[in-house]
Image 1 (cartoon, rainbow, N blue to C red):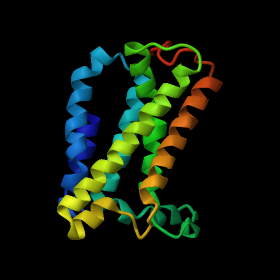
Image 2: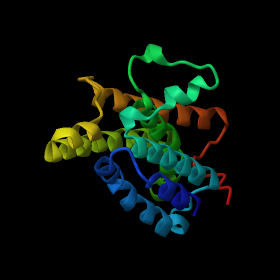
Image 3: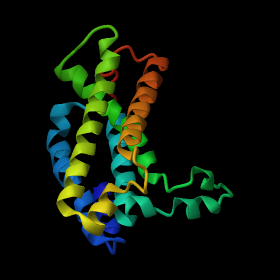
Image 4: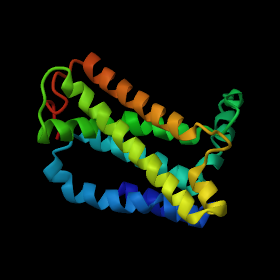
Amino acid sequence: MAFAAIWGALAIAPRYRQDWLLENVLVVAAIPLLVYGYRRLHLSNAACLALFVFFTCHEIGAHYTYSEVPYEQWLSHVNVSLTWLGRNSYDRLVHFLYGLLVTPAAAEWLAAVAPTRGIWRWILPVSFIMSHSLLYELIEWAAAMAFGGDLGAAYLGTQGDPWDAQRDMLAATLGSMVAMTAWLIAGRENPVAQNSR
């Protein structure tokens, strides 16, 4: 319910309505599947909270158009400046958050449906994120090619970076590696073991 309220609020007067619609195609597909599969997936409350935070960050990007999220203005209120980045990096941040915040759910789901041993229980969730990040970049590219013009450019959001797709995939991979490393340090031997429901 909380996400529905956030989604509804951010659906009001987005900066670029067509881009907002395009950005929400996968959300409209994913959220009902997650709601339907909530009990069957046996995700912990922590994994569900992480997914909520990720989808909320995505909706902020969709509302403003990723390359125009005014986070620099928001940070100026606490005397923080990221102008040294040379571009609006909200897109890159959300790719990192995809890895960081979706990995717990991926790890729990994989441990439940395809239990592995040893190092594979740590490698598979990262590989899952990497492969889905690649798939997303291919979908993003195909959509940009299909729609072209300003909508394609807004959706792709490369901001002149010819390596944008590769850097986005790296950001997601690093986020996933951070999540799995934190899991390892926290002493969670099995990613699905302490389900906190």
